Amino acid sequence: MLVTSSLPLGLVACTEALKDSNRLTAASARKFLHIVTGLAFMLTWPLYSDDPSARYLAAALPGAMALRFLLAGLGVTHEARLVAGTARTGQRQELLAGPMLYGLAHVALTVVAWRSSPAAAAGLAALCAGDGAADVGGRLWAARMGGQAGRLPHNKAKTWAGSCCCLAAAFVSSLAYLCLFNSLGYYQQRWSVARLAQASLLSSWAAAALESLPGLQDNLVMPAGAGLAALLLVR
Image (tube, rainbow, N blue to C red; front, side, top):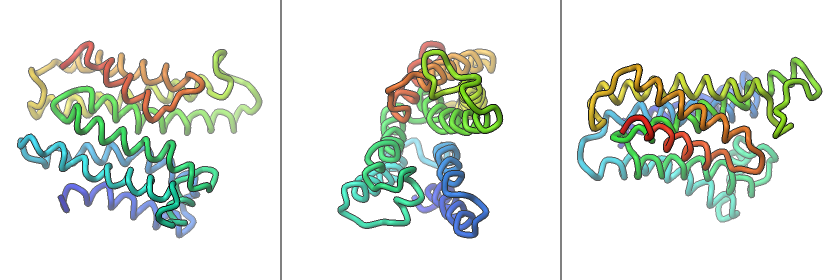
């Protein structure tokens, strides 16, 4: 447990150090962790045994993270540093939405899908890389172009640039992890890279489409939609 948790926890510690030294802004640190935490978490999965309980042991780390967000968001614990580094508005109640759901999505995909199902890799790739890249790409586009240039017709709060970044990042990361887990023999059969690429493209398209819609909680619908889409082509 100590070995498998050291990578994601080490990333958090390094990011906090960079933020404290003013090398990263709070917003940049928050988005960096959103992108890399889940990707680093999946890299530890091959270190677990084949015991059926392994998935629950792995899920304990994001579960503890979600619990921490819950307690801080409810005011049971007082963690000003956590609130300042995680909540965009600086209000502790915000931890009960995006951050806590981010952790719960990791728990759900780990327990329900695990490394034996392509839904886990596709879902977490969409949640972490896809959603993170959408925000970064959209903000950079807005800062460069300004105004309403390149806005989506059905959601003026989102941009074509953000959706394209979401699609590209989710595709690359999901394909990488699908290929990794496929090569390690975790799936029911060995799939060709072409087939895995098709599944990655479909799941990434689903993630980008869901991310572009207004009024949805990205941390829930994106991993769910991407994971289900991947299962249409590979199992």
